[in-house]
Image 1 (cartoon, rainbow, N blue to C red):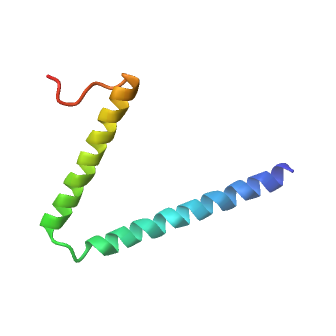
Image 2 (cartoon, one colour):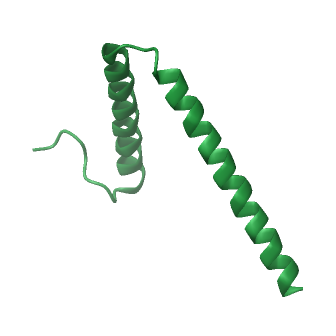
Length: 70
């Protein structure tokens, strides 16, 4: 029973790593033809999304400091 669980866990890990590698390769291929300005805009948009999510979490739980205080 334990051997079957270990084999299933290993197969699961291999599949997840394969998926992660494939998605990262596709992201790199998608970003190759874009300009530096477009890449910068995408990075800023991602940072903005993180800030909004952190603010929502802080308002919800009170565990994180509010952004913009100081």
